[in-house]
Image (cartoon, rainbow, N blue to C red):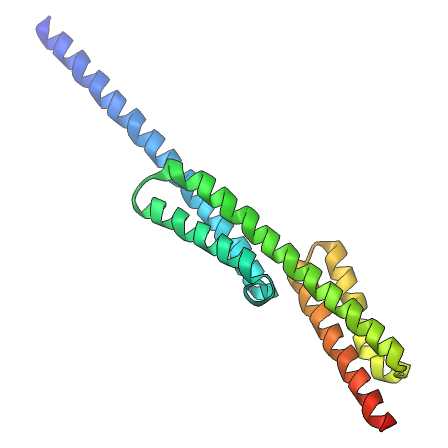
Length: 168
């Protein structure tokens, strides 16, 4: 009988250890998934130019990402999730800020080009880039939208400068 009791106690201990290992694995998997999501939005924001066009928000997001990575490295998976969520929100904000700045820059450059009076030939490519930016923005392709709006800004500025040079 004592052999059965000790065998049952050993089985309970093994079960508890297995259950703990499963919970730890789930926690690690959730932390790793959260960090992967953060890395994806970080890459998207970087590609859109958030480091330069939303520097303060980018820096805050990057710092939070580094804190989450450090907690993961330390094995503190429970601390990773809120840090990763905050980093993801901050990278999203940086990306949105970048797209908004690119759009506003393109609108301002377009207005300056209209005031300078460049012809349609000079602003045609810029208009096409601007329309492409608006289309990409509606599709939710924020990186492509930011790039297109910056390209439009460049085109409008070039057209404005060309008109000013021609006027001299």
